[in-house]
Image 1 (spheres, helix red, strand yellow):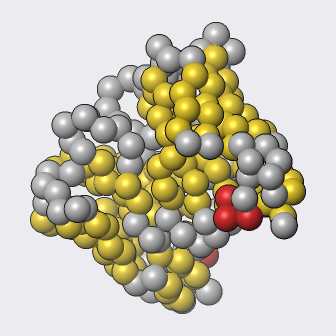
Image 2: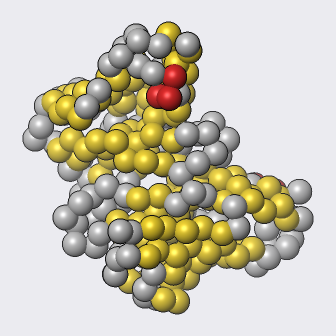
Length: 114
Length: 111
């Protein structure tokens, strides 16, 4: 069966510091991968998605970047964090074949920028 | 940007009652999905309804879709305290599997 992992679970970082959040998927190959941000009490905003290694699409201009160095690894990064980067970051995957269009979500990372 | 708007934003009911949540969207869709999120956790897929379907059931869940009104509803029958969570609708449209989420409804089921 497939599983998705995110770490760290929580993170407190000062403004201006770098960021690296990691997401890995097990039990499937060539998944589509997604990074979302959720502000407190709000819905999810799609930040990046990837259909394959090295292929990243950005949905909104921002202070963040994403990379996919391996088939089942998706990394969210920033060189210098802003206060507005605080939020709950969720990674998700789905089947690239489109046979099931539902997405499977990781447990999330709570980021607080002080 | 958020495509879906959900109504109500918050809903509090007694255990055993039915809970109805509504979702409206703006553009044409391929399908509409409902997800559940427990506080501080990831989302879990509940049910998917395709644009050519009008109603779908899964256990205590009933989803309707009215494409002419660009709206959907999620009904949870005989609610339980364990149903307490936030519920989000999400749509796919055009090419690809990208989801556009609504703002969510916070459901509280009290004993």
